[in-house]
Image 1 (cartoon, rainbow, N blue to C red):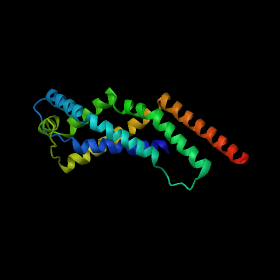
Image 2 (image 1 turned 90 degrees about the horizontal axis):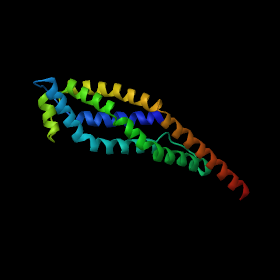
Image 3 (image 1 turned 180 degrees about the vertical axis):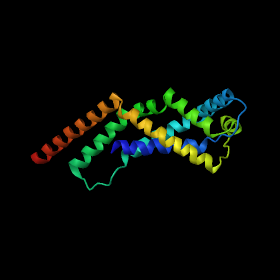
Image 4 (image 1 turned 135 degrees about the vertical axis):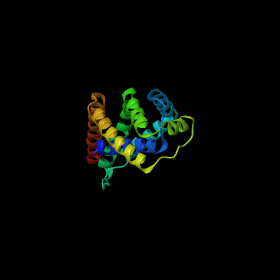
Length: 181
């Protein structure tokens, strides 16, 4: 459940970046690499905020529920714990050097130097439909790899376990209070 929500958040943020970061043809691979790094650095702060919001929204959403009372409070507690305890970790993993290099590689592969230059300088270079399709496919693959890295990170698993345990404890306390009242 949480990974599906995280997947949507990661893919949405990556796709938004892809549509925001066009690039087209270069003179040398080094020039393109430098331009891709500059383009990534330019959009990274906005991408970080988009990812943070998408992750929070994904935790707050989920399947509609008819829960109320103790169950609803327990579920809300778990979501709040996860947001508090995992957001920084998810951002750390999403913006790791390895992920940055992979995004830059995708940009160099898809866009030309002029598009990269335009983006690196703060503009919004137009992209062709085939570029949009190629980058969307690359980012789907990147998103899947990101989800694997999150699922394999012990810190994330520990935060999930803590959130579930805290929610169960809150549910038991609430039920006990209702039974005593």
